[in-house]
Length: 187
Image 1: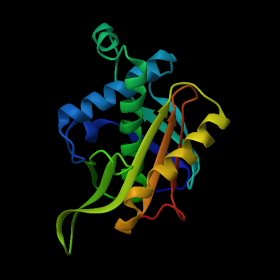
Image 2: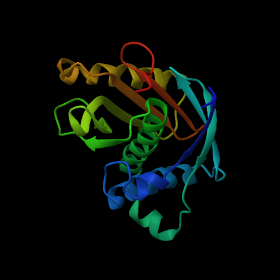
Image 3: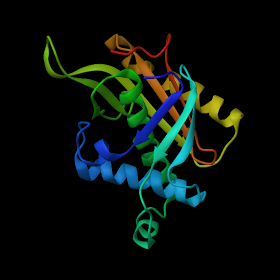
Image 4: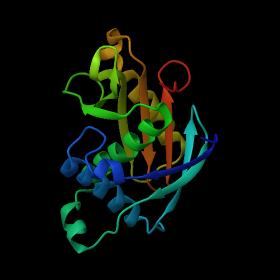
């Protein structure tokens, strides 16, 4: 992959190929698409990426209609789940890990990043992912959210696995993706 040149798509997430069910992946992708539509972004939209890797890429999102508006009218929830969709597809592409597993409450993270297989067997937890969204906000809001989310991962530090934070701002749109300590490691 060329540094700084990316293409992001919800296809694998919506097909259930990243560890979550197709229904869940589709709901997350619809949420992200609805948030992008509220800002009347074109499709695909140029997503600015910062953090451990910088650059931008095309984010291909899904068509939104009246049924989506009725489904995702709670913008706070749409932003939360939409950020999960974008955070997952960025994490999978940048870390080289193959998918995710939903985490339970109280762990300080949203997902475990997993490999298809390794010497321990299939679907081993390899890293942690915390995703967060902001409908509209500037650099100050993004920096504050990143700081908050990095600290939030503390309960699972004892796992000894890298923690990644993805903060998605839908207005620009942009995503800040970084590792808790050090650079993003391709697995």
